Length: 313
Length: 280
Image 1 (cartoon, chains in turn orange, green):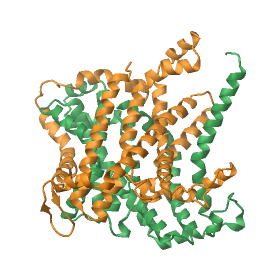
Image 2: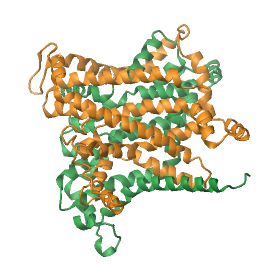
Image 3: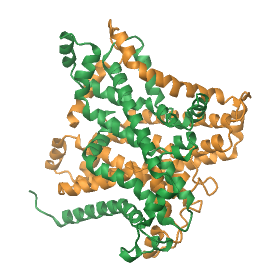
Image 4: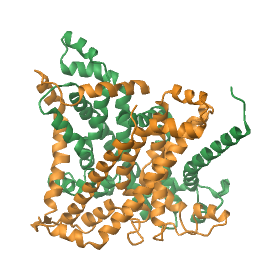
């Protein structure tokens, strides 16, 4: 598929989309048939559990007996949960750094990949950047648990060659979140790089060539032409990376078990422990509601920002 | 051709150095674990710098993996779960995506808004009631508990709807004049034109569920019914020290098949993932 066929979709999108024309005879029945599989799976596995979260959050519920209604108790508990804010803090810290690394370093690597080079070499670079993305997070985290070992790991060995002291990557509250950040970015940055590459390729060559003719340097060309035209891609990656990095679970689980303390604990891990460690299902559901609210809020903020600075040609 | 300036050469050199360092940083951990899989002792695994001398290496670790955990069972379970979800998602998302792209029916915009809204409620939020639903209908500790929650995909519906909107309307009009019903138009005209988009969704879906750790951890209690990501963690928990080479071998056995598929399907995978951004 070429990017031009994709682009052309944006045009008729506006025509076919909102305030759709009057219902057409026969379409209703067809739509019912086409939508039934999705509607059933949506009702049972998305809507019912979503309603379930809301209901459960008003109950004290463990796995052994059905719950008792406790009103707003779980929400009052949220306010008094000393750990919750700390866990949100670690989650946000790790998520935002991962987001920044993927969006910024990903852009740098994608732009560098545009340099003239043999096809096979470009292919090899692309391949190596993307490969960790398709490997499971638990395998990735297990590998890095070896590499980040304080006394025997490869990372500290290499740092030692440079003359640095050994770092307690997994056992200190300063570096445990850094480890999660490094490992997650290492795994996911290839996705951002690839999306950037596609975005860069969809920018008309003539624009950049015209700028060269006008004598604009590489730096000016990038910030005046490439970056503005790339802003929808940047926005897409900011949204996707935010949502994904706030949902991290496997890396801290395998690398650090969220510790030491809660320094590398994510909100999903905290929810998981309350639900399936303590069997405190009602309270875990209340945590889930806060998490959904955070995601909705973040998405809303990003869309609000995008109106201001995203440039659509 | 422009004249080659010294600054130009320097910036080209810097470009390749940065790219090479990045590629090495990605490759080295894999190469390290592959080599570690052949080490006979913990000391050998952690030997720095690593050596490739044959006298220190052994293949015994791979046998130990399958002795310690039902490794091939994990693998099969992972394939069954990710494969079933992918097939089911392709069916539900393509039909629903088509309905939203092309059919005119009452309540369409409202329904579509619900689909888009559900994007913001990830499975991590609903995992608790999902577990209760599954346990009420007696599906916990079966692979069904891993398959069913993955089938509905708002992302997939949206992705395919966007693609269907790009297809020229005339094609369908022509089919309609020929008297083809909606289903025949969809299966005979629309789907054959949508290979790349369907592959995109298939690859993204398969990768996601192949890698998922949370759902199997919550739903499955029997070791025999676990998927590979949890299986690896179980394997790692079984040996904390003493035979770390076995853990490395288990990880290697999980990665090599993915690497093989990846190398063969790379063009498709690279293109699919790259275009997912453009389509949204």
